Amino acid sequence: MERYRRIWLNSPQYQTLTLFIQILPFFCEFLLYFDQFQIYQKKDYNIVVYIKVKQPRANNIDIVIEKIKCRLENDVRHQILISMEEVDYIKDDKGKIRYIISELTPYISN
Image (cartoon, rainbow, N blue to C red; front, side):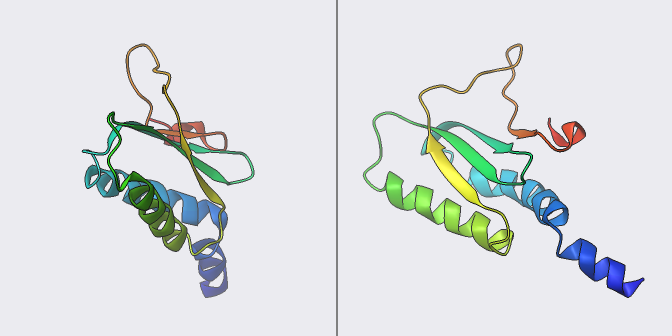
């Protein structure tokens, strides 16, 4: 049983689930830099974080984005590729922003 537990704790599925739980409070620290954000997980477990930066752009926004990326990579132990993408618009779903979207497990998506 312990062997299966270790396998699960090191799996990409567990890493992703852990990341989703930790990410939302973490982003609250940076609300004054972003209008919106969205986390999108692809079928290959890789994650793209879409961010809409507030205008005018803060001078240190690139440092903030890199800090977030490093934190996320550390949270998943560098087992999942994470990329950050600046966008002009994040599509809403009937007036609501879906902060987390996963191609793997639709029930995780809010």
